[in-house]
Length: 85
Image 1 (cartoon, rainbow, N blue to C red):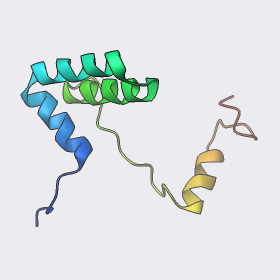
Image 2 (cartoon, helix red, strand yellow; image 1 turned 180 degrees about the vertical axis):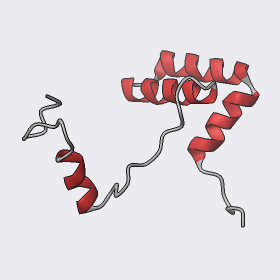
Image 3 (cartoon, rainbow, N blue to C red; image 1 turned 30 degrees about the vertical axis):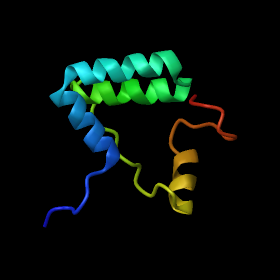
């Protein structure tokens, strides 16, 4: 059974694969008028489209109390969420 929709992220990445000029225009527009957050998102999408990084995946349990506790109690994390040891 196919999904009745396409996730925006997937559609954007696919459009960059199909049209490199569009990807360049998109990046230039973000460089001109975007925020740092928008720039990081654009770079991630373009890097994913061209195979530089794997597609982003949600963390198991994301959005649940168990997922949040698991994230902050992961091996190598110090108490207080101050980074890795």
